[in-house]
Length: 91
Image 1 (cartoon, rainbow, N blue to C red):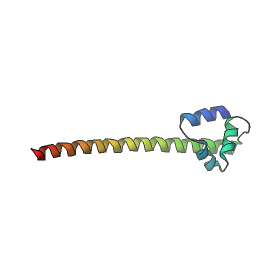
Image 2: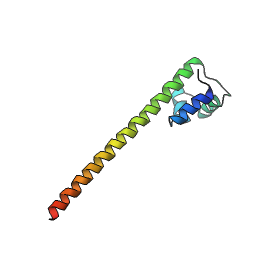
Image 3: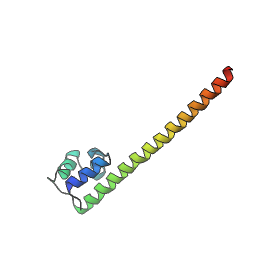
Image 4: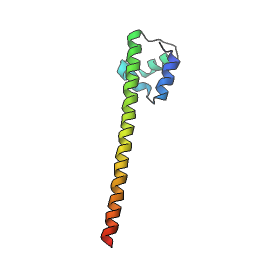
C-alpha cells in the first residue's frame, strides 16, 4: 500500500481535489486530509476505493482536456475557412 503522503502526491499530480475523493468514498474532505497526513489510515477496501476514485477523476479530466483541444482546433479551422470565404466574396 502507498503511504498517505504518496497518495497525496499522486492525487496532486493528477489534479484531483480531496472533495471528489471524499464524495466517492462516502467520507468527509477532512478525513481525506487526515489520511494524506497519516493521522488516520484507510482499510483495504477504502484504499481500493481511493485509487479507483483518483483514476476515475484523473482520466475524466484528461479526456475532457483532449476534447476541449479538439473543439478549439475545429473552431480555429472553421474561423480560418470563414475568413477565406469572406475575403473571396469581397473581391
